[in-house]
Structure formats: structure tokens, C-alpha cells
Length: 158
Image (cartoon, rainbow, N blue to C red; front, top):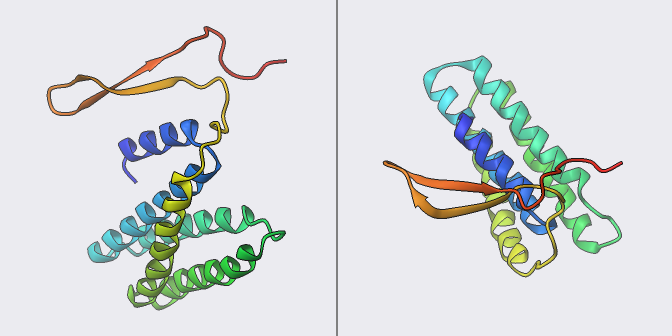
């Protein structure tokens, strides 16, 4: 994953509520799956395995976020397990065939979570973070983001 992607994900996480955070986790998984495909095309087996291991950690995060008090969690659990197992099979078989099914399942779930996140109007999970305003100024080749801190004290309060 490129450094600019890491910075973008970090910024998005700091500004996310519960619904948007799940969408960000899916985006991270897809970024690692893209890295795995790229590494496979280059013939770099070690980078391929590393990228898939990181994608599996993202799926683990989705698994841990399931709340089994709701019936939907019982439906999501086997789909996440399927995706993890498909990634493991891709490593073992050293191929991309297994990833297609897992990626298709995850993309369908991703589309559903995007719609659910649009309906979540709760406050961001992280407090005392920098406010990010995009589009105030433009750089030579890109959009410039401005960070404004309303308070001088950020971080944990004791």
C-alpha cells in the first residue's frame, strides 16, 4: 500500500463514525487485495503472501466487530470465514482463482455497508481530532487538505 493511501485511510478513520469505519476497513481490504494481485503479476510470492495476510487481518477486524445479538451477524460470519479461507487457499495454491469468489462476496457486502453508512448520522468515534477541510485551496497537481485545530490540546485527557 502506498504512503498516500495510508495517510488517506488514517484521515478517514479519524473522522469516521461506526458505519463509515466499516466502509474504511473494506477499502483497506480491497487495497491489500489489489497489492496482492499486483505482486502476483510481478512474480513476487513473498509480497503476495504479505498482502493477503494483511487483507485477512482486515477480515478479522470485520469478524471481531460482529455483534451476535443481531441476526445479521449470523449471516455475515460465514461469508467472512469464506473470504478468509479463500485468501488462505490463494496463498497455498499460489494463484488468483480463489480470490475472485472472495472479492465478489466482499464487494457485495461493501455496497450494502456503503448504503447503511449513509444512514448513520452519529458523531465520529474519535474525539479531539483535527478537522479536515478539503477543497479550500488547490495545489499545482492535486487538492490540498487543510487541518484546523479548534483547541490547542489534543489527545487523551487525564
